[in-house]
Length: 375
Image (tube, rainbow, N blue to C red):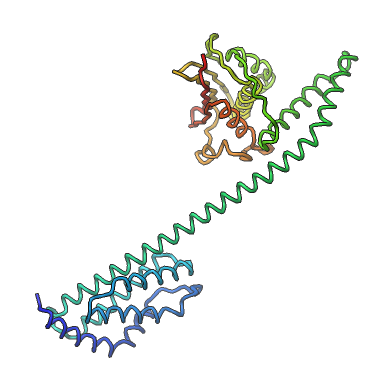
């Protein structure tokens, strides 16, 4: 190992040689560097190379000021982020600068043994510089990403608020005349029971009223009835399947039920019926994509302090990206869907202190609902 005096002497000789060849070093480095024409800081390439050269030259005389090195590295990282340049291009140019300087040091003609500690120091400085620059670049890019995510989330929430307000205004203005029409249709039916198609008209109007109720749930403008009562889970599903029997028959779907007669739940019956009806109708729609052997299985059982209900079908798998957003408002894969049905279902189940989830693969799609067992 050479002593400090020998190293200082070699450093002095080397500094003189490097300064004599500075223009050649900068020219060679600039020609080999990768620089985009769109880079807003491309004119600083030579200046930055000169600054790095000065840091290396000064480190041969006195120990490197690592804070100054870090500041310079962070400054260049900020420029790279501002120019929106890939970090790979930046690292390539830094390592190119390292190679060029080491090449000129080697060409200095100074004894190799004297140059060995200088080689080590130059490599250490470049390693430190790369570490600080890449760390700062990564930190800034991550912040940019988080800012974009926050902006998207905020914009999404604002859009939902506006849509909710629009939906609320529309359906409140629409519901009053609709209620009147439903009432008069009922009166006509009472006075003229033989009039054809009144039952169909009444059914369609009630379906429209049901859709309006979904919008009101989303807009949070309707006061939801909190009255709860004890109902039989088996009886509720029996009523629902009878209500949608025509859809089950039309879809050629086999529905099997496995629910004990003694399982009861204390809930708002209308709301839970709405949830179960929505999931069953979605299942029937999904099964239309299957040519034969369409089946829906309904199960219900007690599990500790919960009642667990599952509705599964053997339709096509729901893509993973859709599963992640299936309960979000206004998300739908149906051509004429509103994307609020499952969102409303989730709100209702959570209001009852329960949970709802969906799993899906190529064999089975299952909606699982848990509700508190209060018995």
